Each structure stands twice: as structure tokens, then as C-alpha cells.
Image (tube, rainbow, N blue to C red):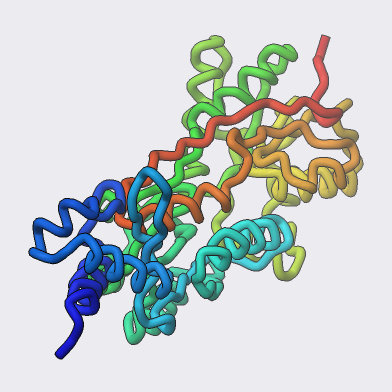
Length: 360
């Protein structure tokens, strides 16, 4: 006959696997478990000791027992991370920032590259559906457009695959935890800075198929409108995620050269989608005979390592809080423990360097 403590451990294990302790991830008190299952306090403590030894719960002195989010079968404790690129620009920092906290909690982490391609994203999701991971962290692909992979995400969600979206979700998806950047506010902040430096002919180079690009444009245009400064279409350059992929893999800067030749002439300053675009734009400007910031000021987003590699050093916006990967890992761990993750909205802080200058 199976001992009572083992029967109780089995029952609680099933509930833990199904995420039954929603909201806080906290198990009922020993006294409540005793009443619910009609067993002794000793039986409850033995059952909890079994679950703690298996790594399924963590007991906090004076507080109680909490789910760790781990599955009883270690083979299921897999986390899939879908990122658009392994470019040095963000990949290394994201990889290390996700690996450390997730592996520390007992999860194995696998990285998948979508290559900014919805078709590749679909292939990855189809393979994951065959053996669903415990959780996923996803940086969206071309999320200014509806995503046709919702059916595969829904299959994974039916299998209790917790999911966190990084830097925005998909507009046609049901609500899911999303780590958001205040991109409208960021575009406004950069434009406000350049307007304060007496620039009235401000251009932009932005990504047309991401929500970040659209929102940064909106903030930039709003600041110009409030200042009574025209935001002219002829100064805005739009590029696609596919062109970004070619830039990262082949150093194909053709779309930036086109922007300089066709749209830069009327600009005294340019806001870029991020530091990567700003870095390559400065290089193209130098190649074309322009001087930054004497001829044109340039600013970007992310406050990345490229800011100091660029000559001159880039004015940029830094995320606050800065640990994007850590916030994503914490949000996913909260979901796996059946807790409600706190909403994360990254605000921007201006970091002024030498790539912008006053016209006065």
C-alpha cells in the first residue's frame, strides 16, 4: 500500500504541474492541507519534504511553501528562446542575461534564431509543438503586421507553455505578458533634445515593419508638432527587417547610402531606430564626405557598446531598468511558478555624447 505521505505528494505534484496554485505560487498552509486531505501534520510535512527534495517546491521559513516551476520529469524543464538574430549587437548580452537566472533555477535553455522571418518562426514553432517546452521567451518578428503563427502559439499554450514577449507582442494575439519599451516617449525625448539644440530640419531612419519603429516615429512627430516644426515625409527613411538582416550578415548598407543621397540634404539631424543603425549611418556619412556632428547630428536608442565604438561617440537613449534579459527571465519564472508577473515597462533616459551639437 502506498504511504499516505506519498499519496499526498503525488496529488500535490499533479497540481504543481498543472499550475494550480495561481496568483502567488504559494501552496496552502500545512494546517489547511491537513484539513483538505484528512491527514496528520506529520504526513503533510513528509509530503512537502519529498516535493522539496525533487526541486518542485521551495520552503521559506515563516512564510510557507512555494512552487519552483520545475516539472517532475527533468526532460520537460526546457526553455526555448526565440530571437531574430545572433548579431553581436544584442545577442551576446541577451544570451548571458537569460542563461544565468534560468539555469540557476534548474532549467535548460535552447536558443532559436528566426532570422527576422515569419516562415522560420513557424518552422521553429512547429518543431517545438512536437515536444513543448515549459516556457518560451520570444522577441517578435515584424510585429507591425499581424502574425499568422497564432495557431501554433495556441497549441503550445494548451500544453501549459508559459510565454513572455520581449519588446512588444503581436497585435492579433490574446493578452500575454509583454516587456514593453516606451517607444513613443523615446521618440519624443530624442526629438525634444534635438529641437532644444535648435534643429528644425530633423530626419529619421526607422524600421517600417516593427511596432517599435512606428511608435518611435509617432513620438518624434508629436514632439515636432508641439514645437511647430514640420515633420516632412521627405526626411524619413524606412527600412525593412530583411534589410537589417542583410546589414548584420553582409554589411550591406545600401539603404543607408540611398537615404543619404536622396533624403539627407535637407536634414541637420537624424534620429535612428537604434545604435546599430546610427553606427552604420555615421560610417556612411563619413564615407560620403559629411562630418558628424558639424554637418549633421545623429542619435539612436539602446545606449549599447556601439556608442563608444562610434567616432564621434553616439548620443543615445538608455533603458531604465537596464537589465532587459533579467526582467524577461524573472517574468517567465513567475509564470512557471503560477505567480502573476509584475508588468515591466522600460522608460528611456537620455545619454548625451559628441554625435549631437547645437546649431547656435
